[in-house]
Length: 159
Image 1: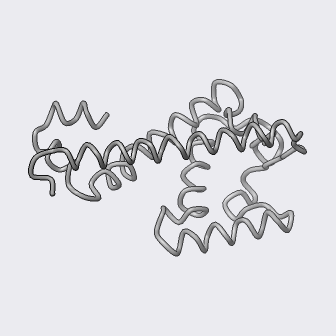
Image 2: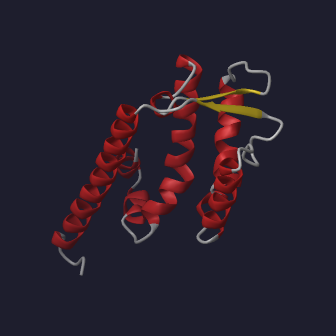
Image 3: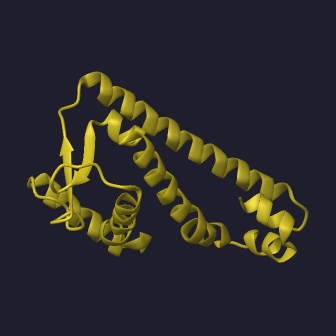
């Protein structure tokens, strides 16, 4: 998406190359699009791949599957109330607060009275598979970050 916008707008092309612009772009454009895609997958299949793998099911309080709009709303509530919109320190505090509620077998603050989250026990095979997938994603993120840093360092005038 960023490449397409760079082709369409020379100003965007220069802006996105500035330090921290990619983080702002990700927060304001990519993240909301990921929420929409996630809600779309849930709407089409009744669950997302990660929740299916981890045997988690999100539904309304009466057990019915959520519609696209309701699931999208929940995604934004998770982002705002569960992750504090990514704000440093506050995000960590909010994640710890929500984790503590779940550890005490209580619903998260953003789910109370609106959504129901059910989870079934995981087999060791699912735990291993989920762990491997998380490690692969982290490895890919690190690899892309290293490649981007190398690319920037090889451009004339980038130092």
